Length: 241
Length: 223
Ligand SMILES: Nc1ncnc2c1ncn2[C@@H]1O[C@H](COP(=O)(O)OP(=O)(O)OP(=O)(O)O)[C@@H](O)[C@H]1O
Ligand SMILES: [Mg+2]
Image (cartoon, rainbow over all chains, first blue to last red; front, side):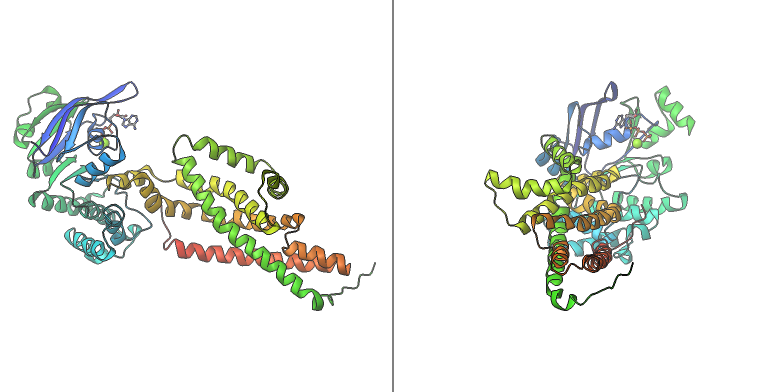
């Protein structure tokens, strides 16, 4: 059994079918890059995996937690899979430490001292232990995104979804975030990331999924996908870059 | 025309004034705290709550915002007893202010909630928080911060509007002024003094609200 099982997933917004039967199984420790043109459904796929969007048909499960639209199932699923967003989405009224502590205390009912210790540990892991008391608006974009990663990690997820997590960053800040992701990958975290960082995808990922018009058009190891694309659509996409 | 000012009555009637001030302060303290609490609940219900609750809240808000406060007060004090709900003047005044501020603050707070970036809700959800938890711990404080100046103004308006409760003989500051005026026939002086006190109360209230803002919202937000 795979860690993440995505089977025949379909999703429409009104008359616009955005996912047209996606199949993807992810093994523990895999790092998957999802690439493709704008509008091909990459974000929608990620958002379906943790239930931010409802699927119309098909099934998704993460480590045995089945995607169901009710609150109890959603909670069980979201405890297994964290998400990091392009726009960081830190809570502006809480410090970096507060951001990392909140969901532990609210969702897992962790006592404050333990949540605080965990927050310190996770901020340390992303190289920001010294920013524990800083508010989001006192941090650079790269630092904010690393806090967001620490916040997701503090819930001890089995897998992480990353939706273009470096796209909102100034170029010089991209590498510090990618370095953190690279480390997570090395530690065996299962990652699904939508990315435009082709070099990173090539270096770090175990498989690359090329999405085209709502389908997983081509899937394979990075070498095959980048050096030896089979479909004309992927060739064209890679040529466009 | 020559008018001789006479404030000598202050010597005799200051306890009456003081009691009126006390009651006005009590009315605004209770009204502000419970009214804003009611407003938060209604704002949540209208913006994010279950579908079946929204029409009821909308009806309440529109009813209150489109009728005079004085009539609301009369309805509560004179009307509700026929339904078996007896209240003292003070209880009726308190209730009227809570109900009134609840409706107005609902709309102000709802605007704050609706200005929340969608990513905040999604971040809460993706951390496995329930919608209620996300509202309580993620959405509420920044939403209140966004609209705190408008909400503060509304609370001051309600405080000044509380003068009306003297109409049901709730013994607030205006009631005290009326009483003194009727005993001393010193209308100008009595209302001059009460006007000055309202002014000071309003200024003090704004200060208190600003301080409360600094306390609740530890930081200025850029976004
Ligand atoms: N909430 C929504 N309501 C209606 N249509 C939507 C919604 N979200 C996405 N779409 C549509 O679904 C399609 C796929 O969007 P999606 O965001 O998944 O693309 P993407 O591959 O992530 O693109 P990008 O690279 O620009 O982020 C687009 O046509 C988009 O307009
Ligand atoms: Mg996208």
